[in-house]
Image (cartoon, rainbow, N blue to C red):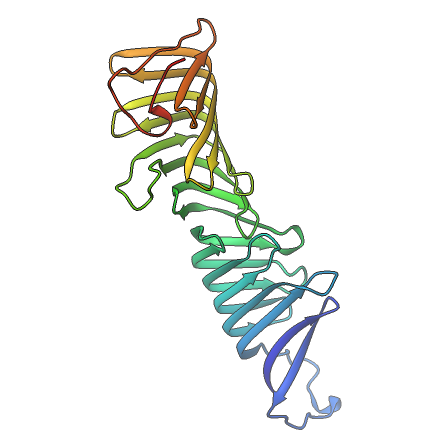
Length: 293
């Protein structure tokens, strides 16, 4: 029998034969010890639906090898459908667990969200029942605002929320005109880092260091929360807390908390003592543009 398609209906896997029927031998003619051979098909497709009948996801592949417990797929091309943001997922190979529907992806894994964000890694696990993707491998996330790298990730398949686990580095373009030469702020931390695209928010944890390469200014903190202006593609607000220190030339200032607001380009440090200082004629970019009252 030449198997052409695979569909998911009412939680059961249903095989649909479209061509090449052959007469089956009577059960009595099949040796009792004979193993059921692995089935192989070209043009693989598997769909999932919500409780209301809307398509939630689909998994396509060039070829699939089907055994009793799993389905091995080559050249995986999957789509996730979400009211707020769809996403596409690709990899060279993938394995579907036929019992729970979980998907393991391997080699050249790429997620592309509808808003243009891309994530690349070496391997990825998608837990279908939890609507969660995870990996322990190095990860790279890119969009027009900048690039974030780290090791280990868990998040929603369309990346609307995600957590990078450790060794985080973010390079953020702070220029209002994204087509102009980049003016960047680099942020590193031990992790984890959490990001929420819906709120345009990210939080960096543990040994946070933010540096502006153009001026050499550095900021240190235990925790840094960043809000972005999605319309202007700018940093809107930054709150740093815990052992805050700013290095500017030969000067070092310390505080319990630092707040930067992008609307007036001010950076204010508070604590014991409260320190507020002006950069004078020196100009910077991003959260280092101006320090003052």
